Length: 211
Image 1 (cartoon, rainbow, N blue to C red):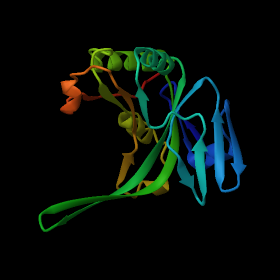
Image 2 (spheres, rainbow, N blue to C red):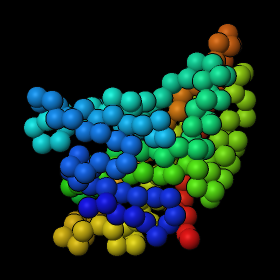
Image 3 (tube, helix red, strand yellow):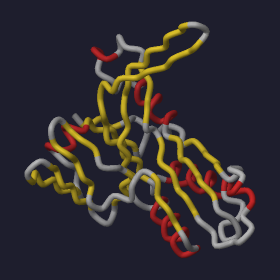
Image 4 (cartoon, rainbow, N blue to C red):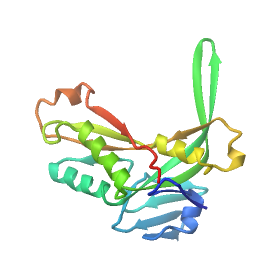
């Protein structure tokens, strides 16, 4: 079942349903032990290869969850795409278990359901958030390397609060995993000390958009 949020520009679809009934612009082909999925030019896919049951799932036009850029032109092109296309990310709803043993805290999680989250980067409010986040985290594009994580957890928590999670899952200790995608820019600067020292890791959150 595809679930359309009351928040404009956001949809969430169970992975199995996405494979059976892909949205406009996507085609799914079952080929041996794999599903091969193609997306159109209006889609921006950040999904790594995965498995659904006993079949692998390959999004052939996916950029991967961590996309690397090596030039100002690549960054400018990616920025333009983020602000105009529909962004697709695979997210996991998990049952989290926390154990306290011998003064050690052990956290484990089990995947209950996987969803394809779609966010319309061209939606005015989402576009505003993306522009603001990119401008805030990237003080200089050409002069330094950086890693920017776009965090989607608040959007997912908003969807859960709106009732888009099946009631039979609510008995678990729910948490979201893989709720982000990352942009990496590699500068050719010789003395990129912030990057070497791990100081160029930044992030910003996308929030639910109320209509």
